[in-house]
Image (spheres, helix red, strand yellow):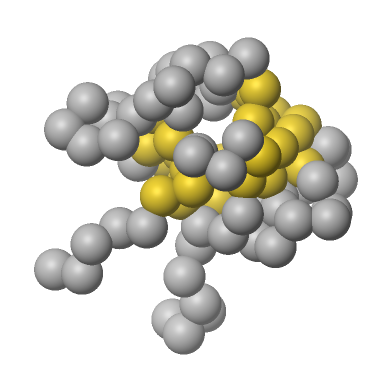
Amino acid sequence: MADQVVPHFQNTSGHDSVAIGARQFMCIGARPPFDHPHIFLDMGTESEIVCPYCSTLYKFDPTLNADESSPNDCNWTPEAA
């Protein structure tokens, strides 16, 4: 797992829902510096999940790559330390 990066998503624009290509991911709320604690969310076998911090509704879309979102302004890549 160390060689795999967990996709990160945010909803700075305030979309009603965000379609993503991953069932396991990190929600950061908004782009830094306005982010909330970065939390790991796992949809399991479900097709959607709501972030308990920012209430963003994430919906799984199998046509997207794991790090893609629709709207496409919701994916976020953490900067290297």
